[in-house]
Image 1 (tube, rainbow, N blue to C red):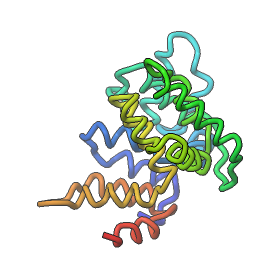
Image 2: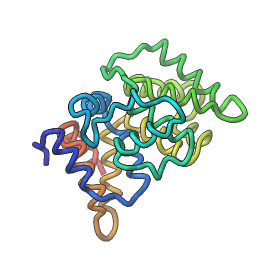
Image 3: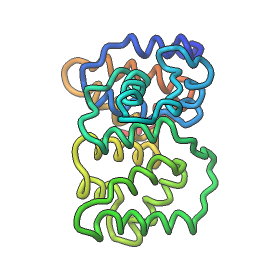
Length: 225
């Protein structure tokens, strides 16, 4: 499977049945921006390559259906406006993927997130959607470091405190993959092979989606425990 070209690999991923709703939601949020862009441009009329940006007007019913198809048929998971907005924003927003980080901007974003969450009564979900969908993985990793040093606890703890449900799950998936994707997927593999029997679906999906990206680093993380 590691040698499959992206298009047939997409079909292979799609063919693996997944009953776990949390798994379905996490999958598109672990893809790189380059891969999401490729799927939209390389085969625009396939089950994955959908021009989401051109169908985001009106009452959002049409983009909802497109995002659901693009994200492995997870329309049943879009149970709130926040869940829909973060998913749509993440799969359609171009992001820089290099290691460079503007430290001043990262520190500013950290303060903005704090003001949008823990500092106020209620949560400004739109601010979380904007920063989590528009910033690079390196930038988000810098934000998590600043958040801990400035406020005494992790950004993940703040997300769990200020958000809930699928929206919280989406934000946590994004930040965990930004901090250390290999560690995140190693944890997924451990859960898939823990106890009696193996969750073949999770195992196959990790292998298929990460085979040509960072599987060797995932293996190294997995072997640490």
